[in-house]
Structure formats: structure tokens, C-alpha cells
Length: 102
Image 1 (cartoon, rainbow, N blue to C red):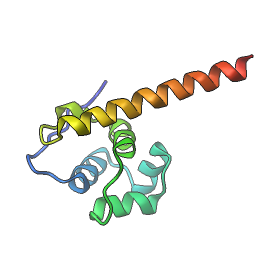
Image 2 (cartoon, helix red, strand yellow):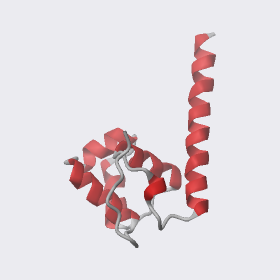
Image 3 (spheres, rainbow, N blue to C red):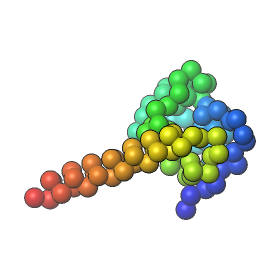
């Protein structure tokens, strides 16, 4: 089930990640483990020092059960980029599963 996060218009990625993480009661380290990144990287995202790449943002939002399609400020290109990243990741996983089963 995907949670429709209570998004405030013009909310930055930093605010979005930080708010939802706290709402779930996760530490930065726990979120990092769920998204295969480091606690330090999550910290830099939340402070707004670095913006996550679209594929990373997709992983973070998926781990926090947020549907990015529900975020109105995201442009079509940003949504398309995330959809493509997700599709490529799924294909890569499928291909690696096939090659190891042979």
C-alpha cells in the first residue's frame, strides 16, 4: 500500500524527506539502510545541501511509502525520469535473476 503523503505546495525534497521520515519514526540510519545509501547522504538531503538524483529520490520515497505521482509540484519530466529509472532497475533485476538461474 502506498501512503499519500500530506504534501504542502512548494515543499522542498529536503522537507519532504525529513517530514515523512519523522512521521514514520525512522532514524536517518534506518532510512539509509532501507534505501541502500548512507546516513550521511540522507543527512545532506534533509539539510538541503545536496538534492537527490531522481532514481535515489524514487528509492527514498518508495521506502517511505510515498507516491510521487501525488506530489503536484513535480514536473512531467521529473516523473518520467523516475518511471524510467524504476523500469530499468526492474529489468536489470530480472536479467540478473535469469542469468544466475542458468
